[in-house]
Length: 185
Length: 185
Image (tube, rainbow over all chains, first blue to last red; front, side, top):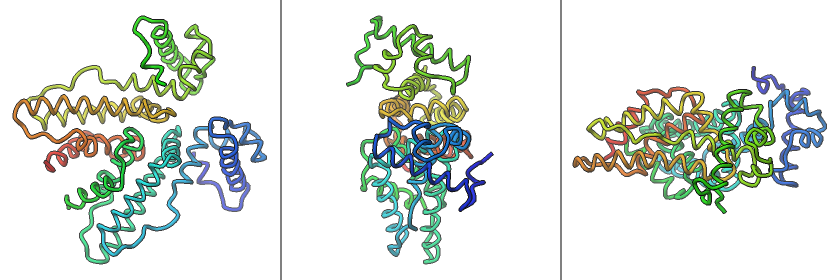
């Protein structure tokens, strides 16, 4: 059962989703994250708590959904004219966004949802951006590492450090990971 | 403030911790994870809910603590006589334990705690085991990759897949990561 997939844009389902997401963001800004409860969010969104429970299961799953929404890239990766530069710029920005306090919280929320769907969507976002960079480089005739190799060699170490070992995350670290991934080609 | 560090073995603090941990494990086995609440756990442990809140902050932090306890290796890594075999055996076991449903839940819980302490301890467990393997290999005169390189090259991709991309985790994948890490030496 994947309730989210059933939501049609413009339908009641989509309106409920939108108003609940907005309620989470407003209440978090006003009262802080620890104060969030399903009844509070439902009241602000103008729905019943049971509507929220039916759709998301629990607060953690809802927060996971909101986090994934915020982690979605809002633009394709910048084109700097070479695979190395595109990957370096992307990895540096990824570190910068994910390692900021808000980014860290979203990543943790995305992962903490009981279903693995939210986290999988985060990974898909990264994979899609890497595919775009790879396709562009292939179009220039450059040799390109596979997406799985880039997930293992660049994305995974960054995410691991964000979640488990927050020291030492820097633009230089991001560039080093890209360098190692390209050296292995 | 690190309340855990203040707990002296045999003191009241240690007894409270032990009885709360045990209450979590019993109640989870009896009623399932979704039924766990701080008042329920406190009642079973024979303490007041405020004792639990004072010590752990909230349920998520307590579950993170219990998860880290369960993820602690109970023995040093096996000695197979060579760096490659030791790393392969360790990585295969790591995948097997972490990718099982219980392991996945513990990893998610460890990461979901509001403080980053639990997740950092998980990473320290892995680093300690890798250091033991490395020191043994160095004693045999083998060239040994640094612990940070092994965390990036072996542990991070496995954890990333457990949390974000659960397909494709296998003993063969673990061995491939070890092979790449050793090839880079």
